[in-house]
Image (cartoon, rainbow, N blue to C red; front, side, top):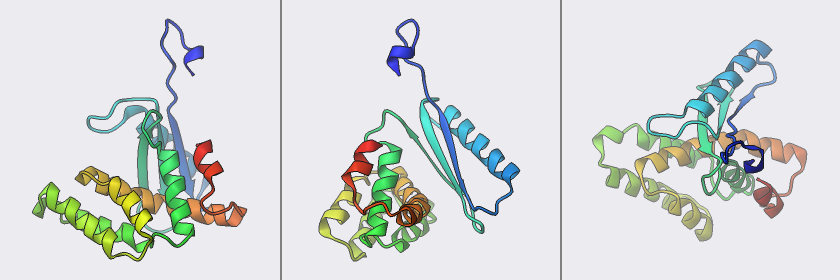
Amino acid sequence: MAEFGSNGEAPSLSVGLAVVHHMEPLQDALDLVRRAERLAKEGGDGEAKRNALCVVYSPRSGAEVWARGRWDQTPRLTQRLLRYADLLRAGEVPSRAAYELRELLRQREALSEEALVADALRVLRRREMKASHREELSAWIRTAEDVERLATELILARPFAAAMDQAGIPVESREVWDAH
């Protein structure tokens, strides 16, 4: 995008994406996507504004889940979500792990950050998955915010995994990872 900027400044790209049930009223879906775009532009506490993607998932029943990632993050939010979707589709990461991490986060006030991270790593160690996948996920957990991000993104990856299965996309496709 740098070549399209003026005065040597690259333009930013803020994108909101809403994933909703097909029976959701269109007006509600539009309101949700506008809110997602606003979150992408405004950021959260201490986050840089603009130049981000915000994905909001609104299941037919249950609470909304959202994640925000800047385009200059490594790996990008799109890459992480697609990687998690591949791991879920291959049965390498049980979907229950995300909810166990979420439950652990509810005890956040009672635990030090170090204890929370250690418990999150313990949750991943207890799950049946290849050691390489366990190490990959564990490497992304250093802080309580990382635990929250992993839990949220694993939950967000579920509808993408279902859509990828429905579309017949091969599991663990490097092409999908590299394209995003």
